[in-house]
Length: 308
Image 1 (cartoon, rainbow, N blue to C red):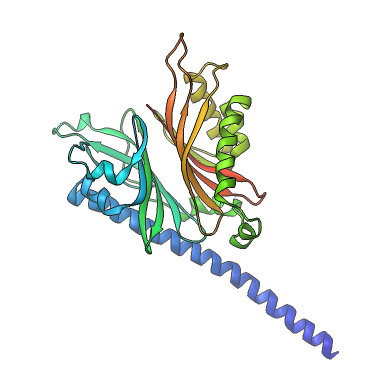
Image 2 (image 1 turned 180 degrees about the horizontal axis):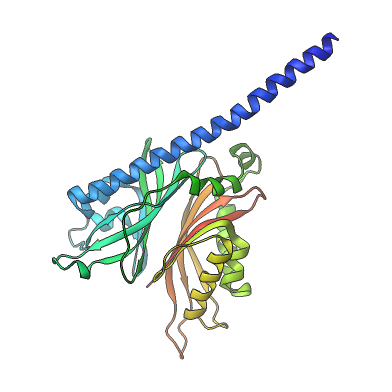
C-alpha cells in the first residue's frame, strides 16, 4: 500500500510538472517573440527619425549582409561607404518568428521606398524581410532583402503570435534538436539539396518537398504566398516563367547561421543559370529561413528571392 501511494504521488507530481514545463517553454518563446518585435519596431522608428543609413548602421551586426545587383555584400561596408545612395524606407512588420533559444529570428512586412521628390505616386512598395541574431545580448540585423511589387501597400499591419504558433508546432524541441546533433553542415547540405531538387522535380514539387506546411514565400511582383500548397504553386509558376524547363539552376550557397537551440537557421546565396542563346541567364539572390521539423528534417519556413 505504501509503494502504491509513493508511485501515485510521483505520478501526480509528474502530471503537474509536465504541462507547467511545456507552458514555461511557450512563455519563453513568446517573450523572445515580444523582444524581437520591440527591436524591429525600434529599428523602423529610428529609420524615420534619423534616416535609413544611420538607422541601419545602428542595428547592423558584425558579419551582416545585404543583397545587391552582384549578390550579397558586407552590410556594414555598404552603409558606411561615403558613396552609398539609397531612398529612405519606412515599414511595419506583419510576421515575426524566433528560435527557441531566442538568439535568431526573422521579421517581415510591407515597406515604402520614399523618393526624394514630393510626388507620393513615385514611391516604391514591397516587402522587407530581415533576419536577426543576438550579438552581445542585443538584437542585431544579420541580413535583409527587399521584394518589390507594383502598386500600393498599406503599412496598417501588425504581427500576431498566432501566425507564428503553427510554425513553432511543426518544429522540434530544443532537447530533441540537441540529441539529433543537428549542425550547420546539415543545414548547408539541405540548402544544396533543395537547389538540386529544383532541377529534378521543378520549383513547385521541390518546395512541396522541402517547405514547411506553414511556409511563407516572398517574390517580386506579388504579395506573400502562405501555406505549402499555395506557396509551392506560386513558386513553381514564378520559376517556370523565368526558366526553360531544360535549363539547370545552379545554387551557390554563400553563407548561413545556426541558432544555439539548433532548430532554426538561415542560408543565403545566389541561384543562377548559364546564359542561353535564346534568352538571358537567370540570376537571383536568395534568403531562406529554415526550421528543423518534428520529422527531423530541415524544412524551409521563409523563402525570399530577388533577381538581378
